[in-house]
Amino acid sequence: MTHPPSPTAGRLTGNLGTTSIVLMVVAAAAPLTVLGGNVPLMIGFGNGTGAPIGFVVATTVLLLFAIGFVNMTPFVREAGAFYAYVAKGLGFAPGIGTGFLALLSYTCMQVGMYGYMGAVLSNVVADVTSVQIPWWVYALATLAVIAFLGYRHIELSSKVLGIALIAEVGIVVVLDLAIVLTGGESGLNLQSFAPSNALSGPIGVAVLFALTGFIGFESTAVFRNEARDPDRTLPRATYIAVLGIGSFYLVSAWLMVLGYGMDSVVDKAQNDTDNFLFSIVDTYLGTVGRDIVQVLIITSIFACLLALHNVVARYQFALSRYTFMPSALGRVHDVHRSPHISSLTQSATALVLTVIAALLGLQPLTQVFATLGGIATIGMVALMTVTSIAAFRFFRATPSCTKPWQHRIAPALAVLGLLGSLVLVLVNFQLVTGFGLTVAVILATIPFLVFAVGTAVGAKEHRSAAELDADLSTESAQ
Image (cartoon, rainbow, N blue to C red):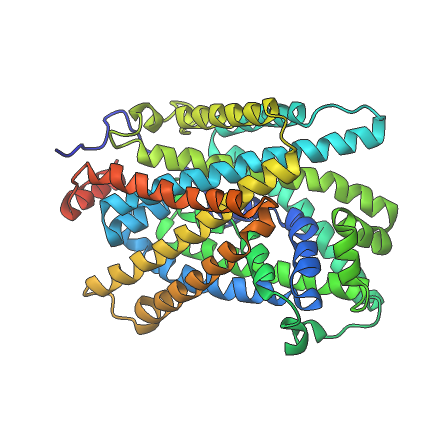
C-alpha cells in the first residue's frame, strides 16, 4: 500500500537568491570557529606546518561531489537534499534511510554546538564578571532565540546569518592582511605545500578536521522551494559555497602558520590549543582585535546553530509526507510561510537532549561537543558517499545524461574520494571523541545503524520508482 503526500502539507515559499543561500550554508560551516578549533588540531596533531594541504584535499573531494550533486538538481524537484537525491538514484527505501541519517547528523551537530556555545559564553562572562554560571543556562537561552527565529520566515534568518557571517569573515580578512603586510614571523613562503611538510605527519587527521569544517555546504538543496530560481540558484550557491569555504580556510590556515612561524606553530598548536586563534589575533591586531574575535566567536556559533536548525526543520518537513513521520510536520505557517510545526519540533528535540546532557553532568566541550560532532562527521561523509553513488547510478540510467565529465567521471571520482575520506574519519575517530576504543567503536556505529533502520522503514512503504516520481511531481506542483 502506498501513501500519497499528506493533504496538510503545504509548500514553502520564498525569494532567496544565490547570496542569501550562500550566506546560510557558509554560516553553518562556522568559519571563525573552524579556524579557532579545527586548524590548531590539524597543525598540532596532524601533519604540522603542512596542515593547510588538508583543505586542498577536502575542497577537491567536495568539489567533485558538488559536480554530480548540482547536475542532478534539475531532475530532483523536492526540497529534501540528500534524501531526495538518493531516492531518485537508488530507490525510495535507501532514500528514507538517508533522510533518517541526515536528521541524526544535523541534530547531533546542532546539540553539540549548543554545548560549545554554553562553554564559550560561560567562560567569557566569568572572565568579565567573575560570576560562574553553568554552561547549560546559556545553551538553553540560545536555544530560545534560535526557536523564535526558526519559527519565522526564512528570509529573517538569512538576514541575521548574513550580518553575523560578514562580521566574522571580515575580522579574519583583516588578520590575513596584517600577516601579509608584516611578512609574518619569518617572511611569506609556500613551504606548507612542499611534499616534505605536507607528508610530515598523519595527513588523515588534517583531512578529517578539514572535512568537518565544510559541514552544511550541501544544504543548498534543502532551500529549493524557497529559492528564487532553484535550477540556477542552487548550482551557483553550491559551487560558490565549496570554493568560497575552501579558499577561505586554505589561505587563512596557511597565513596562520606563517604568522606563528614554521619553527614554533606546531608547539603553540599542541600546548595552547584553546588560545591558538586569540594569541595570533593579539599579536597582529592587538587587544581590541582579540576582544572583537571573542565576541565574533559567539556570533559564529550562533549563526551555525540557526543554519543547522533551519536545515533540520526542512528535512522533517520533506519527510512528513510519509506515514512514519507525523503529517503535522508538513504544515506551513499562514503568515510566516515557514515549517513552523517542524521548527518547534526541532527546538523541542534539542531542548530534551540538552537537558539530558546537563542532568548527566557532561562536560560541554570534551563530551557533548566532541562526541556529537564526531558522530555527525561520520554521518555527513557517509551521506555524501551514498549521494554520489546515487548520482552516478542515476546518470547511467538516464539516456539524456551523456556528458562524460559531469555525468560519469566526476561522480565516480567523488565516490572514491569520499570512501577514502570516510576511512580516514573512522580510523581517526577515537582521536575526535577522546573516549576509549570500545566506546568509540559503538559511537561510530550509530550512523550506520540509523541508516539501516531508516532503509528498513522505507522498504515497508513498497513505493515504486513511478510512484516516487509522481510524488515528486505533486510536490513541485503544489
